[in-house]
Each structure stands twice: as structure tokens, then as C-alpha cells.
Figure 1 (cartoon, helix red, strand yellow):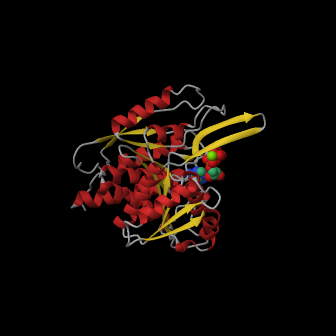
Figure 2 (cartoon, rainbow, N blue to C red):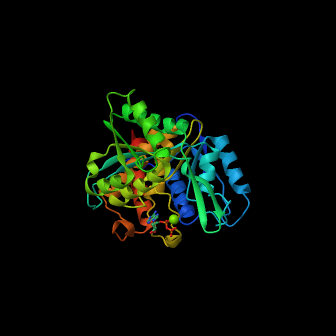
Figure 3 (spheres, rainbow, N blue to C red):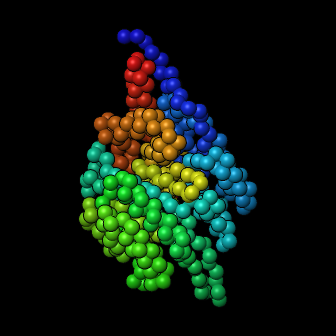
Length: 354
Ligand code: ADP
Ligand code: MG
């Protein structure tokens, strides 16, 4: 057979530039894996890397990161720890989502056949409000020993998120949207979120709409998860539900989350962990960040590259079963990445021989 070097594939259209925010903990090592795999796959994407000094009390780095995403339109990020616990210093992750108006977060929790878990064949999309609710960060101590925290729900954002969930269901052949809330207690705030969703559901007669209280949702997810299809929910409940579902089918190291607004998109690991305790030990599971990079490639329209990397990830997890300790395996992060690269080299060779 003709010897063909694993050179980058032909490029379709121009190169893209994407803002990369490695963040703290395992973020920087995960980003190095993304760049290595993009190199092997010949992905026509360049990164503008913005480091955020986590200890700094100033927001200069964050401002720069936001400017960079505004310029490039797209970002990929690790979790950014907020250096200060001082009230009034906002979480940088929240600040970034708010400044860019990334009003919706989408997480696809889909079982991998090669990973042992209590339930099999789970396939749930979680559509979550991403900028308000319990994350308004409006807290104050009104008198010593009494703290008030404001939860903000707006009709406009509730509608945008519900619209996203129903449109998503319609376009992807999904049958059911479940709105998750606590409107029995928070009658005004969650009541508004629920009412907006109920009204909107009338525009989508082919999609079944149900609602469920957050407490019961957690129980139902653990005991009977197959009843869920698309979940539409507020910011904090979305975080809880995402963690429950990911925990059920493989944990923090596997799934990606997509943050969208009208103008920008930012991709990151789905459960947004920093992973400080496992940083630098070559044991973190690189799949969640790699999956975020695949989402990013789909968003940019680099479908072939996205598919190629996605296939290599899938084979590594489900056929070769190269699993890091979080999945009960003994592989290192680098073992996983090298196995993915092995598959990429095979597929670039195949394409080069055509
Ligand atoms: P910490 O608070 O120590 O930073 P996190 O909240 O970041 O921990 O993560 C929660 C849990 O998920 C931890 O046990 C962490 O080790 C685990 N975890 C997060 N990301 C990964 C990953 N990519 N691979 C394996 N385990 C992970
Ligand atoms: Mg944490």
C-alpha cells in the first residue's frame, strides 16, 4: 500500500479563530489535548488563548476575554475559579455569560454503551436558563444575621428559553418537553416561568408538554429516567438536574455543555467543574472538554472534522474501552488522548487514499 503521512485534510472554506479560556484546575491540560487532537485531525481553527488570573481582584483579564469572544463570535472554556470570596466580587463564569447574554445552556446526556451504569439508553436534553434566576448574585445582609438573596425571573428570558426548548424539540424530532420548577412554593417567580412555558406550548401542538416539581424530578431521574426527553428549566434547577443526569451515566468527565445567545456561543464541559484536586495528575477524563470541542466544530460548520473526532471518541470509550479512573478504569488522560489520535490517524489515512 502507498505510504501516506497523516497530513491535515483539505480545508473547506477559511480558517476560524476561536477564543480559548483554559481557566483553572484541569482546564489548561484539557485545552492542550484539544489542541493536540485538532492538529492531528487537521482542523482549520486557530485559538486566541486568554489566561485569566484567578487570584486577581481586577476584572481586566475577564474584560479582555469578553472582548475576544465578541470579536471571534465563539469561545471554548474551562471553569474559572473566582479568586475572591468577597461579596460583590462576581463569579467570572457568571459574569461572562451575562455580559455576552448567553441566555441558554444545552446539555445532551446520552448513555455510552461501553460505560457501566445503573440505567442504560438514557438520552435527555437539558435546556436551562443561563443568566438569571438564582444566579442574579444580588445578596445582602439586611441586618446582622439576616441575609437576603434575590432570585430574578423575567418573562422575556423565560420565553427565550422555552422557545429554544420547543424549537429544539421540533427540529430534532423530540416528542416531549418537561418544564421543571418549584411553582408550588415560589408562586410568582417559578409561577411566571411555568406559565410562559405553558402558553408557548400551545404553539407546538405536536410536542407533548408536561411539568414537574424539581424535587420530584430528581427522584424520577434516579428511579425512572426514561420518561424524560427534553427538560426546560431555570438556572439553578438546571444545574442540579444536569449533575444528577450526568452522575447517573458516567459523571463529570464525559459530557459537554453549550452556551448560546443571539450573537455568541461558548462551549465547555457540561457540569462545569474545576477539578482542582485532580489537576496535573494525568488522571482527569479529557472527554468532556473534547466533546465541547466537537460541539464547537459543529457550530462553526466543520461537520466532517467534528464527525471524525466524535467517532474517534466513541470508539475509544465504547469499543476499546480506554477509561480513566472516574469511569472505573485505569487509563491515564494521555492514554485516552493517544487512543483517539490513533483512530484519527486511521481515518485521515483512509481519506487521503481516496
Ligand atoms: P473541586 O471542587 O475539587 O474543584 P469539582 O467541583 O471541580 O471539584 O469536581 C467535582 C468532582 O468531579 C470532583 O470529584 C472531581 O474530581 C470530579 N471531576 C471533575 N471533572 C472531572 C474530569 N474531567 N475527570 C474526572 N473527574 C472529574
Ligand atoms: Mg467545584
